[in-house]
Length: 105
Image 1 (cartoon, helix red, strand yellow):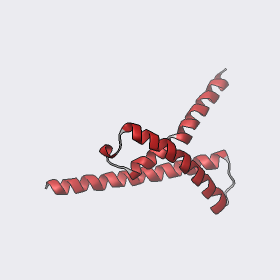
Image 2 (cartoon, one colour):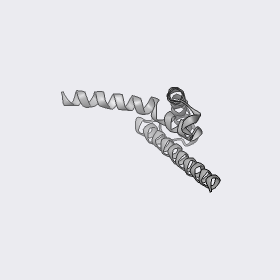
Image 3 (cartoon, helix red, strand yellow):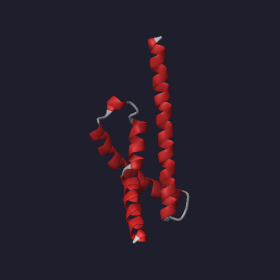
């Protein structure tokens, strides 16, 4: 019983991570300002970018890096891509805020 519930949670969170999280992080990196995209547009782009990022990341680790394509390797590479996109977004936000402070001064 518990194993079945855990399996369902694993599938649900895996699908959310696979089809939403990397793309959302990429939309934040590409469009760092809140007013650039509405929430609906950001979610739509997140879904499309996630699918593209999943495919390209998997092909990259398989064909270029010659790492075996396993579920764990795909998960770790997508996690790294998401972390890099979030880091880029944070740096962009920092520079945008810094630029706006200089304008106000």
